[in-house]
Image (tube, rainbow, N blue to C red; front, side, top):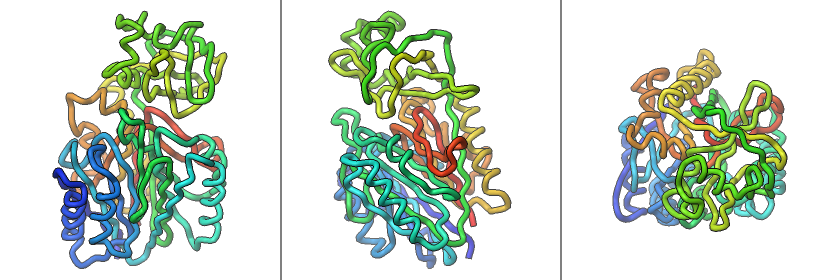
Length: 385
């Protein structure tokens, strides 16, 4: 049997009821086929405990993983206050869900445990990762993973930007500061592509003070003051909604050869510093980046073509779309734009499930044994048999 996928989406006040409806829709579309894996996205209004209970009550022993997000994407467009459930079915592939609640306490130990699980798995093909986007060290996790020849992709939960909580789930387990993963094995192929639609406007800063995930000063001034001079809003206004999260629209880029390393603020803190979830090197030079609809469209096409070409002769059956939260801010007037562009490559008949993230996990060309963490990108992960 070829790989088959189905998507269900439901909107409602109650998280469990919405999850039940979305799961029921997806199961109906599969007909008599038995799912091997569920991928669950729920918008920030829902508690993941109720969502997990609703999905689990219908899926039984079928593993499922997922995360909280600010909004959902499907072939029908952009969805808020909703639960999305995507189901994969195959008789020649299998999957298992992995739950690691200690990710925020020790990303390196979490990576070592993942390495051990994959090493004892027969014919592993792909690893899908979801982590909290506000806590934990995703770079440390990626650097400690040693999984050559395994397709790895994932996203950092965008959860609730007001409470700084990004919960994830695996089966009936859920919570913040955690990692969930789906390990797929057997007769399954994946193609992964990624790109970003942000470009330099010529303004350059020196990172004069940074520590960990906090960018303190640019050109010797609090980061918010540097942005205030450019954009015309007072520095103190950048510490309050909506500007404290809108700063993600204007990330910083460090040139590395022909590539640009993008670092995006999660929010602006009360002291004017930028909170990040990827490190930025003190003393480095950074370019101010801005996005555009045209550049994002090209990035989507590039990522989709990469993913499709990586599948080779395999027929695409499902596309997972992980998009940085900045795209949601930039393209708010064009809901569902991302899916429409991806459909130009894969066609309208292929199920597409998407969510917004605070970071992306993709394969690394420089270090094939472990993945890399990104900001501001779109990731297209195509599944085929």
